[in-house]
Amino acid sequence: MKDLTSLLARLYGPSASTVAGRVSDLIERWRPHMPRRSDQRGVPGLGQDAALLITYADQLRRDGEAPLRTLAEFCERRLRSVLTGIHVLPFFPSSSDDGFAVEDYLSVDPALGTWDDITRLAAHFELMFDAVLNHVSAQGRWFKAFLEDDPRYRDFFVTVAGAPDLTRVVRPRALPLLTEFPTAAGPRKVWTTFSADQVDLNYRNPKVLLAVVDTLLFYVARGARFIRLDAVAFLWKQIGTTCLHLPQTHAIIQVLRAVLDEIAPGVLLITETNVPHAENISYFGDGIHEAQLVYNFALPPLVLHSLATGSAQALTRWSQSLEPVSDRVAFFNFLASHDGVGLNPVRGILEEAQIEALVARTRAHGGYISLKAMPDGSKCPYEMNINYLDALSDPAAGESPELAARKLLCAHGILLSLQGVPGIYFHSLFGSRGDRRGAEASGIARRINREKLDCAALEAALNDANSLRARVFEGQCALLRRRQAHPAFAPTAPQEVLALDARVFAVRRESVDGSDRVLCLHNVSGEQVRFECGRGGDAIELDGYEVRWRTESR
Image (cartoon, rainbow, N blue to C red; front, side):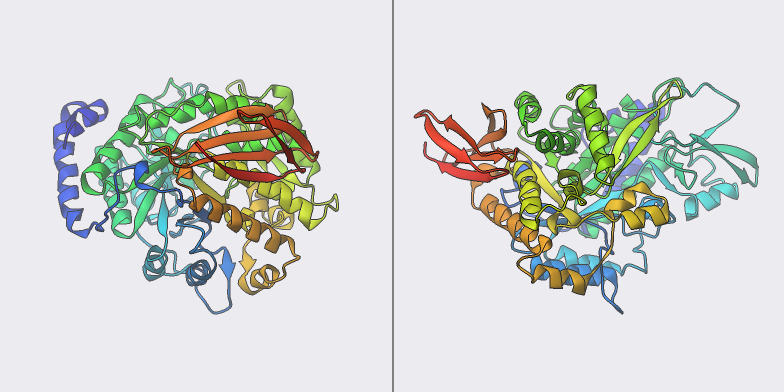
């Protein structure tokens, strides 16, 4: 494989050729099991209809039925006409962190269903699997073997001797970085970036990388079209550095990309790096050799800021500054997910006072603020834990379902109008409110946006045309169908962000061949807006929070 040995040399020096041989062996072993795809390589292989649902495997419940089966049946019936893919959040056996402390990469949690249920989903939707590669569960087989001092796993995890200076290490959470475990060889301090139950893998050991490559190829064989590299920015540890975005981390992603390009070129890597925007886009690499998709983490807080202030100016300026790295990569655009709304991505884009206003709004609307540890020992706001509809529309304010839905649909109109591939979180697609009771009962702030729903109750709400859920869902479907009808919305089709009025976010999309143009207008304020637009200066009026997409002639 071209350049594989040179990539591995950045990680393993003289051992690179041996490791490359082992990677090649894995490729040949898995090659007969790869699905046949006619997809064009990379993001250009996706059309304007590409859009994903983000959901937990057990998002919906029916008595006596495996949750994955319930999800598959519901999605086939309700979503096949509007969505092409589903990101099923970790469905593997796990010990904590709502699935992100994986005990076994290769199994489906029996409480959720079986691989047959995943296969059923894959028959109608392109699936995104999570590759939780930074860490595994402290309850899993690999770490138990480490605790027993099994020589095969002795160097599988990052351990630290003595008391080195670790103050430069960037932390995502205000928790201890090292956790001491009793092992058969004596107590050892293990690197635990996210929690004591999530032990970090040691990529200095090439056997770890080989195990991960083997796992990713297994996922492709099981139907993964997208592979989400969770918390990937933290992969490589080097004492004396921030241990964030290190060159070796980028080299590992490039190795994974090279492997997939060789054996499954239709499969796309997507990096999850909740960091400032300039750092986030580094995972596109040169536009050819790293991730094809990068989460657009700055978008959720910027859209929220726009509707909270009634001004799209910050969002417009930032959007105008975006330059595609290449026509083979794109943003994964989203507004809400199983996590909260990150604040780090907009540091340097929004002023500190504007960020503080978002924090105050979150608390006033019944949400929580997660803090992260700084190198000087202080803590600063890291994430707003709130349901996105609640963030836009105060649940205690008594707003009508119609107004609440208009705000959420205006936000999602912006999401769906932009270059890239959109992902819509389950609770945003179906107009959920926050689950504060669930967050308080668990002590986990993020669970405010992770409520699991009774399928029959959801169906009943969707069948009531006057309900908030029905208004939101029907509005989302209308936007998605409009998007499907226009080649101008293909992920890499050109866009031009226009400054027409401070209260309006405006973007013009044009198909690659120039045959289709759509002007997308979004009034982020509650005021009626009138402005002139177009070469002829025709006047346009938009009601509060109105979304208007209009086809333009050449």
